Amino acid sequence: MLHRNFFVMIERINQLINENYEKQLLIKDTEFKALQSQINPHFLYNTLESINWLAKVNQQQQISKMVESLGYLLRNAISLKDDVITVEQEVEMVEHYVTIQKFRFEERLEFSLVMDDKVKNAKLPKLILQPLVENAIHYALEMMIEPCEIRLLAFKEGDKLRLVVEDNGPGMDEQQLELVKKGEIKTRGNGIGLRNIDSRIKFVFGSEYGLQIDSEVNKGTKVCIVIPYQTRWDYV
Image 1 (cartoon, rainbow, N blue to C red):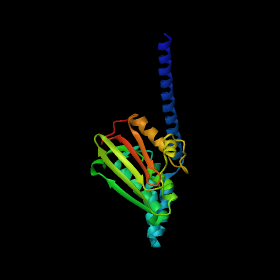
Image 2: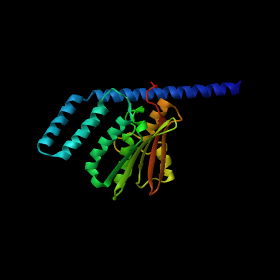
Image 3: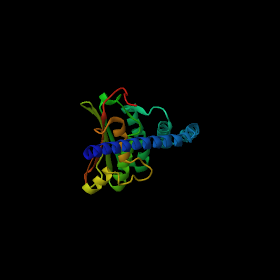
Image 4: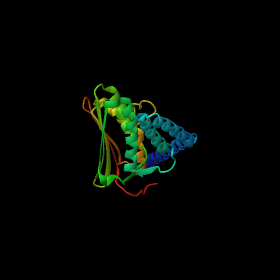
């Protein structure tokens, strides 16, 4: 009887942990949307359009291009609609983000994209790729003097969609890598941590999906998102 009651207790504890986790995610999501609603998007868009117009009048094409990319990112980040988008749309956001970063780092940032046509219309949660590229810039490019190569790959493997961001940066040793996987190394600035993205994916799709991280000192880091391949969204 003690043996049976012990396992009943363990099962109940696990159930309570899962319920609390789901509640915390809901609270964070509510807080995020509340912050979004405080910003008047029309004011931001109109301001950016004015800056863009002034840049074009003064033949400042670089400023114009940067403002257009920033406007695109803001429009997509602030929008409360479409929490689920296609791979092609997500990649387009990454490209606009990289456009802005290239003005900052110039020839030091080398970005390349390899996307299989089969995955362009595949569905995925919004804003899970750009944070990976942002991390590559923070932890690889900013630590290097020489140019840094960041590659984004999107392809189908069986019934899975794989999204890979890899760099040729300084990389991490096994100890650092374990700390990153456990979420014990905080993301620099206000970025989204890899652990948060992994938890978000597992919450939506199940524990068999998520992030895979590989890194080696002086050889770079590779982060891979693995989710189900699907062209229609069947998840709540």
